[in-house]
Length: 126
Figure 1 (cartoon, rainbow, N blue to C red):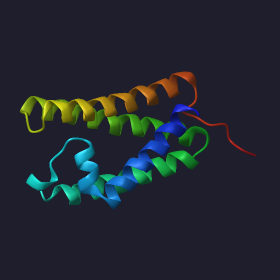
Figure 2 (figure 1 turned 90 degrees about the horizontal axis):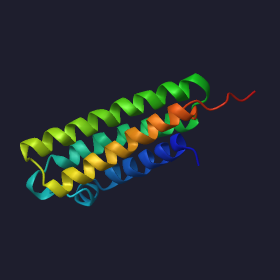
Figure 3 (figure 1 turned 90 degrees about the vertical axis):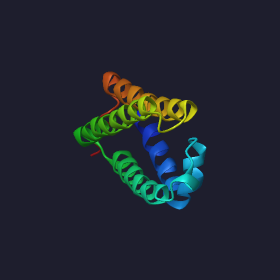
Figure 4 (figure 1 turned 135 degrees about the vertical axis):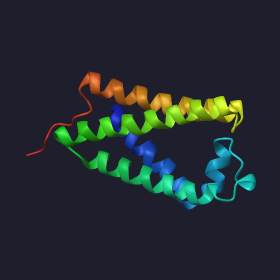
């Protein structure tokens, strides 16, 4: 499986989890929804974004797929930066920060690797 397809499917899976069970998904990443009841609202917003970006990238072809891969890298880069900020401000535990930063860094790396290898752009079908 190429990295873009894997990232797209991963986004959809995480998005479905966040949309259907935001508190459970938050706990998987070490966050505490009991201390922040608004986390469910934000989690569902995050889930919808992940599903949309994953689905549109999954079905895109040609230059659009490459461009959506770049958008995904930017989104994941912002998530990575946010994780570093939250770690510095100590708003989340080191373990949670590490998990969130690691997931975002892995997604950025996979997206960049896909672009370097030329898999960010699927061949157009006739």
